[in-house]
Length: 293
Image (tube, rainbow, N blue to C red; front, side, top):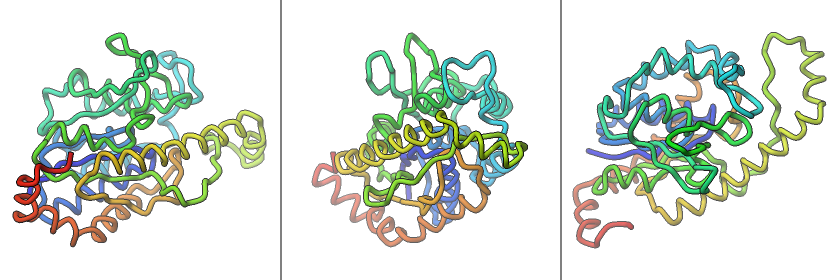
């Protein structure tokens, strides 16, 4: 049973994508292409490069999450840096390009100059990752081909349209990490190094910049929810998978295995409907009726 995936953004919540993919494979589904936004774009590229879910989980588990967002001279204006992320990508992806991928893959970003969505499906894989994860104001923009690129989730939190572009005739499984509109908005804490004493950490959290960070992240959360809600209504994927990751913040330090398991659990819940929409009769009916467009 062939499908295509649209992996949504959500920071640390995106570790659940690992479990979603693993469970889909166990159920006999073959993922022929994958599109991703933000953390979903990172997972999409790693998977399309030939890494299996267990290998991706091992990479994320063995990574020091506290060292990922350190700033260096390569970072432009932003609250946090990506030196640790670049080092990780150097180790995993090196100089690989989209031409080296095992299956078709694309990630999304937004050009701050034009306000338009940019679909990245060629060039260096590292550039694709750094563009799609560039959460505005939090991580530095990526300058590429004359664009100033930021997180694709600003306009397309779950890239269903891109997945459809990659595989027009396949059922689309969309993995949504944004909270539903009716869940209360949480407060956000500014990330601080884990080795700092609690007394200093508490003092940092009381600073105006920490309070501003909280307000900004709530705004990002709310806008992301709304955009995802209306885009999903419009773009109409065949199946929506919603891992129960609502208790997590985007920049949380997490136990990767536990979050991945939430992805597996979410697939379990939608399996009957997934089997129905991927059945031969359902796919034939869709072709006859002209499909969902």
